[in-house]
Amino acid sequence: MRPKDRVRLVLETLLTDGRRDRAVIAAHFDPSYRQWVDGETLDFEGFVAHMAALDAAVASVAISFTSVVEEDDQVATRHLIESKSRDGHGARFEVIAIFRVGSGGILSCHELTRQIEGRGEDRDLGARIS
Image 1 (cartoon, rainbow, N blue to C red):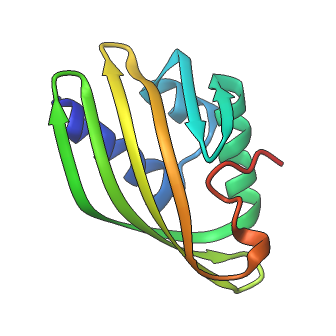
Image 2: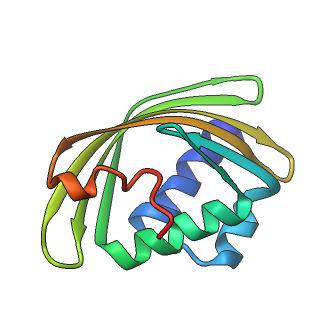
């Protein structure tokens, strides 16, 4: 599978399909995974905690890709996220991310997430871990 296809599949699996448990994450992310998002740094365990926090906060997520560019083992995306919280509030985000993909899965992600619409308390959804 090409790196850009893998990144798209992983984001759709985790976000749109809501399959965020440890086994799914381990199937797509290298154990050495690191993510730098909005000034926060997450390792693999931090990312698992982030996915659990999303599960607790959101009822549904839709993702639409506006740009996906692949060069060697790197994939850059610009995508829009629309989420609905468990208490019914909506939010929209613009995400710009650069992923590095290896044979064992996604190795790293440098990400900037910008809230376009929604409540101020949802601004941290891109990096929330609790």
